[in-house]
Length: 266
Image (spheres, rainbow, N blue to C red):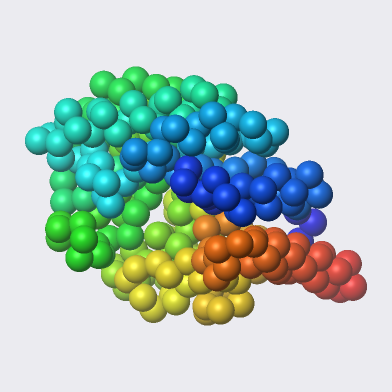
C-alpha cells in the first residue's frame, strides 16, 4: 500500500495544559500535520494561547452536547451563537475548515437551510451514526446516509468530513456491509476524514485506539485516496501526554509499510 496521509490530532480548546505542550513537541518532530480543535463554549479566552502554536488548525464546532442542532428550526438562534464561536476560533487560528454535525431528529433540508444562511465556505458537514445516545434526546441522527450528505453537498457550498466510525455504526443499524458503505461515502469526495478503531457490530462508535477493535483498518486505509487529511479520533488514557496518539500514528504507518512490503514481494 504505497500511500502517505496527512494526520491530524484531535484536541479540545480547553486542553491548554500538558496536551498543548506535547502537541507542539510532536508536531515539531514531524509526527502529524495539523490539529483539529473542538471549540468548547465558554473557552474563547483560550484562543490567545492557541494562537501561539505554530501548527495548522481545523476547527470542529460544538455539537449536541452543547445544544447545536442544525436540523432543528426552533434552535436557529442558539445554533448561530455556537456557529459564531466556531467561526471566531477559525478566524483567529486561520483555520481552513470548520466541521459541523448535521443534527439529530430533524430533516436534512433544514440542515441545508441553516448551512446556507451561515454561508461560510469553510464548512465541512460530518456524517453521523443512525442511532443516537441518550443525551441527544432524539430518535435518530440526521446525516447518517450517503444520500442525505449528497443532497446537502449539492444544495450548499459546504464540503464533506467523512467519519468512518460513524459510517460503520450506521451500517450496523441498517444491516449493511461496512466496507461497501464506506466506499459509497468516499464517492462523495470527502475533504477530511475522521478515523478510529471500533466494534463493527455496534450502532455507536467507540473511538478505540487502533488494534483494540475489530475494524479492518488496513482494508479501510486501502480505500482512502493518497495524501488524504485524516484526523485521528482515538481515546487518550493519560491527561498528561499524547503517547496513545503517537502509538496510533505508528500503528497506521506500520500497516502501510507492511502492506507495501507485501505487495513488493508478490
